[in-house]
Length: 310
Ligand SMILES: Nc1ncnc2c1ncn2[C@@H]1O[C@H](COP(=O)(O)OP(=O)(O)OP(=O)(O)O)[C@@H](O)[C@H]1O
Ligand SMILES: [Mg+2]
Image (tube, rainbow, N blue to C red; front, side, top):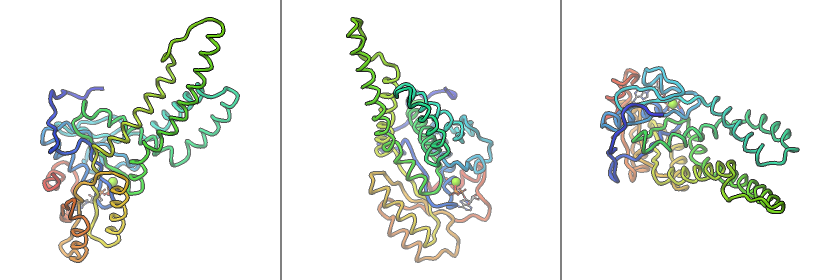
């Protein structure tokens, strides 16, 4: 799908903002607000930007003060925002797995597989992997439909799982590939025995499984090479402790961390905590934003907040 005019040459380059930026952090620190403010900033610089919520409890629309939905909605020039329908994505995903299993597995075990899928679909992991699918689809559109992708995420643990999902799903899809290859080989042998011929690469399901495997590998690689995670925190000891652990895990597993956003800094903030934050995150940089008297809701207020985020 196309959304308006497509740029000929998106302004990019090694020194420009990364193609994909995630905003993460503990609950309520200001991830959604920062993601929206940062995306507005990119859009104002002329970059066609897609802002996506991966928090099942969407609040991007509330922050922007614009009603959003499953499809991208144009917020201002160069900025589109989307609150994906994870339930619908989950249904699509279960249907897809059913189809794949139906083609790859012996028919006598399919009823059991279907029952298993119904149970699995109700599990929490499935909703997350549906969201990972939505995220990968959006990533495939950058560069292309979009110059930049900005992701608002659910609190810390959810984001860590989301970032790891493509590499966790890849071996599972590879298992289906192997099963299908065996089935295709058996078919080819049978066809050969009766004297027919079957060309390589003419199995649509196998092609689709390979494509899915490639997409997962590509996403896993790009999440490490082209994406940046910007952690948001507020100047409180407990929040710093959690952010410290999240940053350690992300860096330790090869994800890039951008400047940390210290948000909602009150006039009477504890100077010791602020100092600890600067020490801990000095290497990657910190940006401090004041706690405003009025909630920064709507594009006007978000633009005011956004300036130091660049
Ligand atoms: N600098 C700020 N000054 C004042 N209020 C702020 C500031 N940043 C965010 N807020 C407000 O704090 C509240 C929480 O912000 P936000 O929803 O962006 O946090 P979140 O981290 O996305 O929360 P959740 O974990 O629930 O997704 C909102 O009411 C928001 O308007
Ligand atoms: Mg939020």
